[in-house]
Image 1: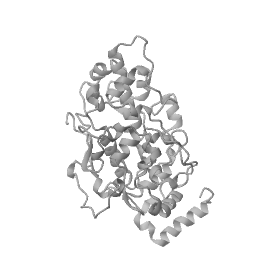
Image 2: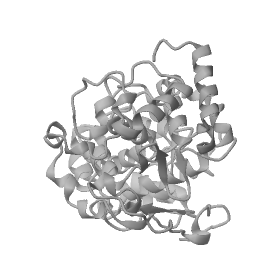
Image 3: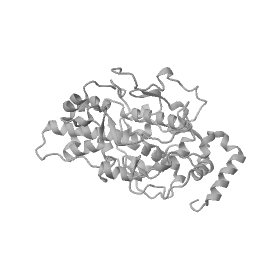
Image 4: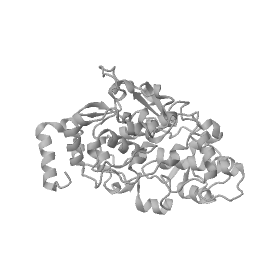
Length: 392
């Protein structure tokens, strides 16, 4: 497939139209890949931006945490996420997946049937807790500088007096290097800063991926209580919402946890990966951090053709049951596995998206029956934070 010429790719697309396959895709899908300029991003960002804002290396957010922070990060159940390493994203592959996304069911419609990113993927790929309180609070905070001084012992300068988010450059400059005699309070502040960086840089980044919203900071006040939130379902809610937004015509970019989406596709559709010798490590998303796993990026038409030709018979419904994968997953990752196959709303502040476990029962080793009509969350779906000052 690597050697297909441009003319061959065009003929593939033409033959699809003749066969009537284009009827299953949006009309624009055959011609508009997502954000051509962003194809060479790394972990959702262009390499030049990452070098400028992050300083390169060290992990998903540009630097590794001080060893003294690990007890606090483990206390908050963010210890596993500190191990996540970003990798090159293939935006043509992501475009091909978005074309198959159905907002009404939150599933991909592939030749094998319905499938989607589920709570099991979040727990095992990212190492996040999936049970707990919803990730939500008051999103508009009156005294932002006071909040930062209270929980971080620092605040952006006067030139950013109207800030509502923290730049990654500011977080790194203030918390990457800690004094040798740092107090417990200083270490706790640095741990909160690192978690904020993980949230905005790895788990729930926007399309720009250079800052994190301050609405998450109050949830980190008591590090012992941070683990009580369902961060995993919040990541899934944001990814579902972004896929729904991007599935609409004229969408030009995409954000959120795309390393999870791409890794999900490679684990379940290994025919998309031209390289498959990477060892398994935990969190499982790190399998692609050294070698991206798909060699040179194919074009959107080739990814479409691969999925159409192979996803029917070669889709792996339960990829994490292989002995070599089970061997690297800690038992703690399965604590709430009984919740993986559930029907419930996933929540991240104003974002509420329904999780339809009953539509993808084959991903849990069950026989798929005809599911009920998809649930709707009513007026809550699509609500934004504009004009909602002080609202929970």
